[in-house]
Image (cartoon, rainbow, N blue to C red; front, side, top):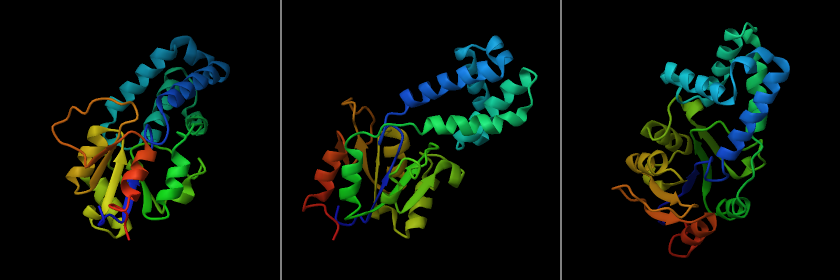
Length: 233
C-alpha cells in the first residue's frame, strides 16, 4: 500500500461505541422533557418517543444524511402534538448534541492516531453528527467530511469522492477505515478506495466482496500500515 497517502476514518463504532451513548442521551432527554414539557411524557413514554422519531425519519427520506435535523424535527413533532411552541426544539437538539458527545474513546484511538498522523494525512468520513474537535481529537485530522456537510451519506460514492476532492488525491491513494461492511467497506471500495474493515467484535465477514484488510483494532491497523512493507514514504 505504498501508494496510499491518506487514511479516512469512520467515527461511530469505529473510534467509540455509539449505542450506549445514544441510549443514555435519549433517556436523559426524556427525563428533561418530563420536567419541562410534562404533557409530552404523559402522552409518550420512552419507546413511544423513539417510534415518533422513526416516523419522522420515514417522513423525511431526503434528510437521511442529516441526523441532527431529523432529531430536531422529532422534537418539533412532539412539541406541536402536545401544545408547546416548537421553537423549543432548537434548545432541545442543542442539549441532545451535548449528551451525544459524551463518548468514551476506545483505548487504542489516541495512541494510534498519534502514530498514523506522523506518516499519513488523516480525515474523518462519517454519516454521524459527531464533532471530533469537541472530543479533543480534532487536531489529528486535516479534513472533516460528513454526510451532513456533503448532503449525501455512505455508502454513496459521492461522499468518498468529495473527500478525495478535499484532499486533492485520487481514490486509490486513500485507505478508508470503518466498522460497517456496507457503508464503509462497500462504499469506499466502489469509490475506488483501499479498504480496512475494523472488526472490534470479532464477527464473521459474510459479504461477497472483501476488504483489502481486516483489523481487530487500530493497534493492528498501525502494525499493518506502518510496517516497512506498507509505510508511505
